[in-house]
Image (cartoon, rainbow, N blue to C red; front, top):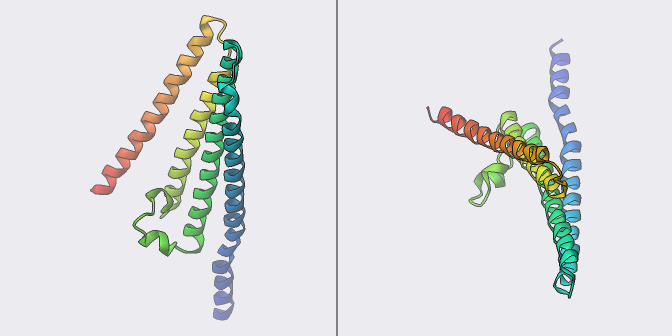
Length: 181
């Protein structure tokens, strides 16, 4: 009976390696999104020469609005790739093994060091919140403000974003104070 228990525990413990599929898939997806955002940035920069051309003021304004919207999309792509990268590193550290190079590196960012599921959740939540802020900005740029209520909606959205960022920062400070005691 003891041998069966040992074998079962071995299988249970080794089953954690199934997480490697998620780690590799997330890492490859992150690289793909980094690649796409970089290509988008290159194309955007390549087309900026047209902005300096002798364009009519209304055409230039339209191009400027489109360019700003594309910049926001590029930022959104890089943030999404960052989420995937943090997710894959966090899963690896939590289920497989601590990343020794990250632990002992002087240049390693604390964002990439994940010690618990709460660490992973908090880091992902912050980046996802930033993605939502960028998406809101993207929609705010493209929105047509035809009535005063439209402006009220915009200001309400900005106030809610500010509140979300404040609460996130506040919870981070409270977490650090708890860790000090």
